Length: 239
Image 1: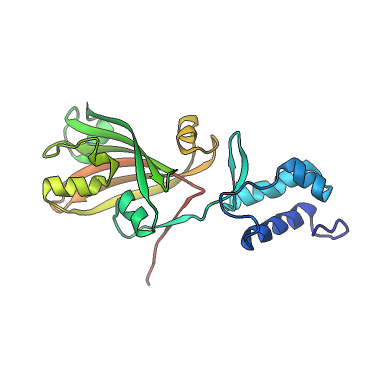
Image 2 (image 1 turned 135 degrees about the vertical axis):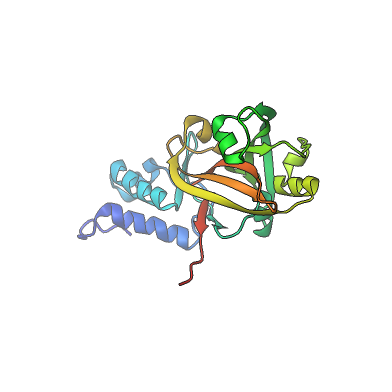
C-alpha cells in the first residue's frame, strides 16, 4: 500500500496502486473511482497528493474526468488504422460496436473559399453541409462536419443515420478510392466538450480529410473532432 517512510514519492506510490486496481479489474472501465476526499481519508494523505496521482493517470488515458460527475476508469481506446479509408459506421461494426449518429445539421449552403478549394469547385457552388455527432454503443465518440459536392447526390436525413460512404457510392455508382488525411492534437472547445461529454480543454484529435472517388474527383471535405480518451490511431510501417 502506501509507505510514508519510503523514498519513493507518495503520489507515485498511490498512482501505481491505482494503476494496479485498474489492471487487475478491481476498478472496471466506465466505473467511478473513489473521490479525492475518500482516498485522502483512506490513505491519510493530502488531497493535493491524491489530485497529482489522479491527474497523471488522466494524462495517461487510464482515468477520465466527466464534468459535474467525477472521475471514471477510462474505456479501452479504439484503434483506428491510418492506411485504409473506412467510414465511421463501417469501422465501428468491424469492432463489434454498434454505430449511431445524432444529426445536428443538414442543409445546402454555398461553398466557402476553404471548402471550394478542397472540393475543387467554384466558390459559391451549392454543396451539402452535414454536422453529426458520431456514437459508439450510444456513447459520443466524435463530432463530424462534412461538406460534399451536391452534383449527382440526393441525400436524405434517413440515409445519414447510417453510412454516408455507402449512400454516396450507391447513388453515384462509383466507389470511394482514397483520401488524404491530416491529424493533429487539439483541445476541446466549450461547444465540442458539451457534445462529447468531456471537459472543456480536454485533449482531442482534430482530423481533416479530403476523400476522392474512383474518377479522381474530390467528393467530401470533413473536419472531425475525436475524443482523445477513446481513440488512438495506428500505422503499420515497413522498411
